[in-house]
Length: 619
Image (cartoon, rainbow, N blue to C red; front, side):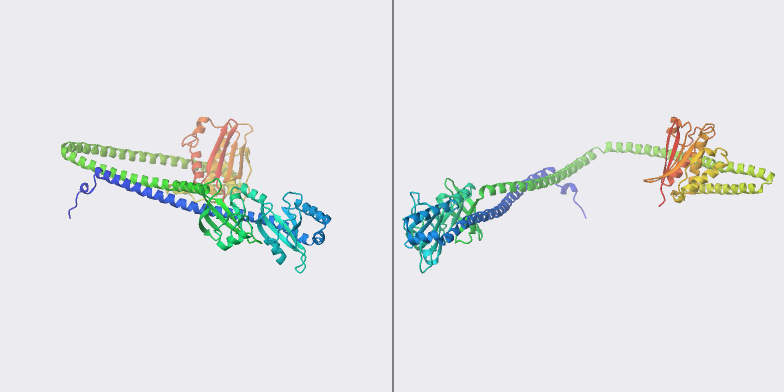
């Protein structure tokens, strides 16, 4: 089946450019929709959240205002009860003598000064006031008829009454609390306490949040906005308005509705309203309504919401932009990257097409270039073959060098026990000539042990040939030190007194192989004793101690030290300062210790040399 060339199917860079412009226009439209949706949603959410927060705070404030109002109401309510039982009040109502009334006036005056009541006065059964706390003032209640007041008739009928009204003498609004003096069959008069709320209204006014208290008819009685007093929360019906006006409860107040419109209920006691305050414009408020217990009143508290909601909406929209804009930027970046990749692929495709056209035109030049390349490949292969030959020769040379190093190392290790065997054999001959068979048997036993050691060395050589190593096992460090000293006894007879060995406890064990570790110590002891040959006060200190990561075995002498030149390459094969040495002892020792995860450290100066072997502690 025939396939169309890729060049025909793939769009050109010009086509991709047009597609990219359309894609960016679509992306911009979608981005605008997303931003608009995010801003709208953020605004709605912020408004709801801020209204809920303002409602919670406003409810707390409203409850506090109600509590303060009740506190103001409760304190003077006991006065009518006390005065209705007072003997001086009874005497004044019964006798109505000038002296008795004067005494009562002064008493009422004194009581008012010590309470929150505005006026205290006493009326007879006919409603005329006979005594009052304001008897000295021009607006004194004494002699005025209050028989038409509901608080008077209510007290006469029901013993107690409460009534909010505008004073017909003082022209000041207040709450009248009354109580009958005497029983219903033989009443003497009525005691009245008038309470005014000027201070409470002033305190509310300072909060700059309108608050008002209305009665069961919806007439505003107490308010932080003076011009709202005696307005109504809703239009009054004709009969109710006529009754209020005929009773002169609020004087000539027009009883018009409050300038509060467009209520939108959010819950039974919370609604959103628009209100016009004196000197202000139409503003949106959150109205919270709370009943005043023990009264038929209701407190409404208005919380301004426009500024807080605007601030909350602004912050939430900024937050939404902070989330949406980076996401849109990321989407735009991915779109740009995708378009760039498509443009790059299209450009590469166009370049390939152009290249193919040029290839057709320059076939001859390409043929020549191919021939030159073929020649270069041939030269490269020839060079590679020579390099392989050189590498094989280098490997062979390395093998020979390694074989020589191994042979020298084996000779170095076997020479020590062979020399010891020779010394034991000579001693055994002398002992036999002297008929000291016991000593001769002891030397022969030592010779047998040394032959076993040589066998062990050859076994190690086999292991080395297999490119393996002796498995590590727990080894008693004390036994390793003692074994190395025994092997050196014949060669360094009379000189081992220089060894100052602090043997470790038998419980201290390290990971390794006893035979190979003895080889390491023999080499270090031998080097130290040879360095001290002919020196007075020669001393080789051997000690072991546990460290955080294992065991450290130290061999320190007080010899002349190692020259810096030798010390620099101390663990290099064939590096030695001895006339007969091969320079392999320390190399082999280092390899043995490294096989068991350890290391050898050396420090040397004119005061001597110290080798420290670090080994892993057996568990």
